[in-house]
Length: 219
Image (cartoon, rainbow, N blue to C red; front, side, top):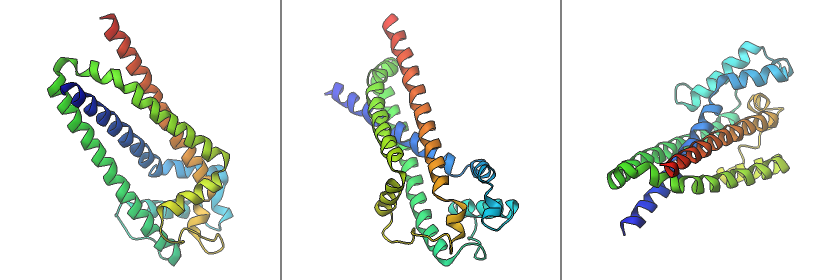
């Protein structure tokens, strides 16, 4: 019985670590102002949408601060539909953040229980299952990456239909400064960066755990 409890806790711990890690990477990239700056400069976006670079950054900062509940959106820049959609987006961010915190706490609790049950052999037991759970995550992310790269537009539409219960996300560039700031090309770049960072994290964890397993075998 004890063996199955330990195995169950290890799977829960691994799963919680990977989910919280993925969400942390998503939050880091989505709120990384330098990413927006680099995209704007690369695309020379400010003159294309009839504003200055400084004003574009100011309104982007306003957008990110709004998502972090620090301010209200600039009504002079964002349309009514933009604002309504961003209310939905902020709700989604709130749920995602709470999910990240929940899984991180679950990771800590499960780790503490494993230390209590396994004592000095904690890392040995964890390392035996770690790469198996991690490999399943790598496969899922890999399949998702193939789907996204095959037809990003279709994926993006399905993504919004799944997460939003209305059509406020259907914004027109003629009426929405929001969609001009972050066009489809922006999200292709953002999601590509997020996936690359996730793969870097997972491959690093895979290599470190493999080295740890070899060390245990040698000992």
